Length: 229
Image 1 (cartoon, rainbow, N blue to C red):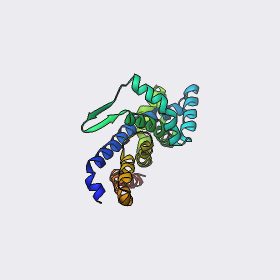
Image 2 (cartoon, one colour):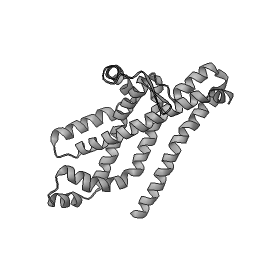
Image 3 (spheres, rainbow, N blue to C red):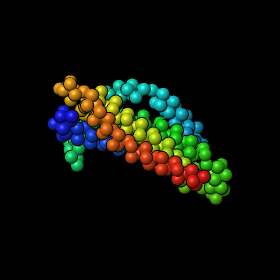
Image 4 (tube, helix red, strand yellow):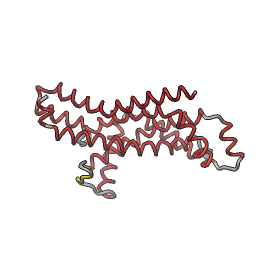
């Protein structure tokens, strides 16, 4: 326990970095996932093909492999287009490793968001879309104004579960020069080998502090949706 108390500043730095990666990548993956879901149900063939190919390739690839594949290209992009070294925002240090983790997790998590949203779209009655088209609405208007608002009501609980898994997936970034919670645990374990169990228990509690509120929210939404049905 002493190792955790003595290195509380490192733990806080790792916790805030993990939270930053999870939140930013979560927002971006939600946006990209909704776009991919729209592609998959689009009447335009090339968009459907792109969406299906992207989902099948990325979703069925290990996250570690995606990190490795994106390593060189993302580092070059960050260095040329978005030159970031070590900048601090609201007490959180943002470096190239964090940006790299955000990019990789966004591309990966978006595939699961897409499939959840697409299942919600398919659960909306066909008559809803036909009614919208009969009023002269275009496909984007039918999707955004008629179908998606109804779809989101049914997919919120599973969508939150996707983001719970997404938060745990941030731990993969520790192997790619990103100083987050697992990287903190590895550093402290090397310095304090006798306290390895306590250190990783503390890191586990830190993850639970992020994921448990989301899990409770998902359970509450499931109960509310059950009442609606």
